[in-house]
Image 1 (cartoon, one colour):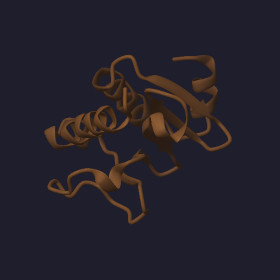
Image 2: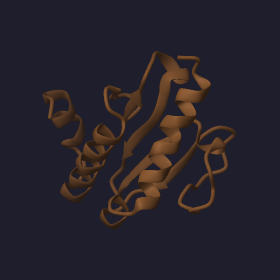
Image 3: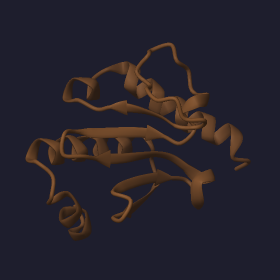
Image 4: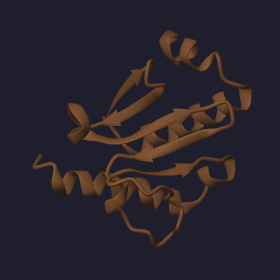
Length: 123
């Protein structure tokens, strides 16, 4: 863990830090070679395959109560698992938990987000 990430997570409860890092590890595995950008003022860690919002796949948001995994094009993803929440025009999120990290439905959403990005980014 980088020192800036350690400082960033330092203000959160231990259970939130642990869940954040476990989710980050899962995303690193499922989104190989993705770029991670820590935005301390926005309190988020973004995973992307290119600059700006267009290249973004998802974002991790810690809070004092938990961790949200937000998908930048979540409104376009399948709703068959009913894990995605929110009603924004583009984004949807998942309220993370330790149990959810082991569910194949979460992996499917992450993989679909990557596939959708690959199909629509023109790369």
